[in-house]
Length: 79
Image (cartoon, rainbow, N blue to C red; front, side, top):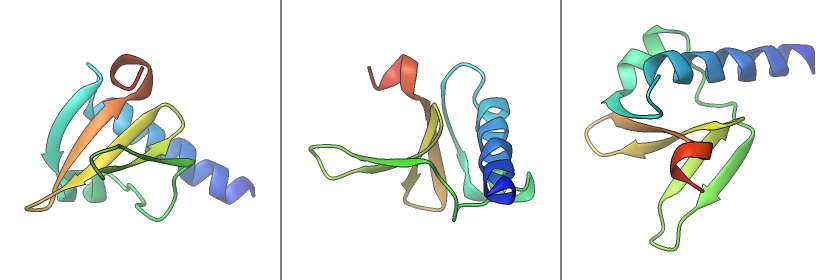
């Protein structure tokens, strides 16, 4: 459990550093090179339009076409 929590905390830190303003789009490879592990997340949010956001605590991401990722801060953009 400690190892999983450490991965989640690292993921959250990477998302925060990549998106200090709370909303950013970047290439998936940028997160991977920083050590982001897409297999670990704390929750999933599905929008009415069918988009799926994966969250690491308060930071989430949406996988976009062309290997891009939209990063959002739940408190700022999801209500």
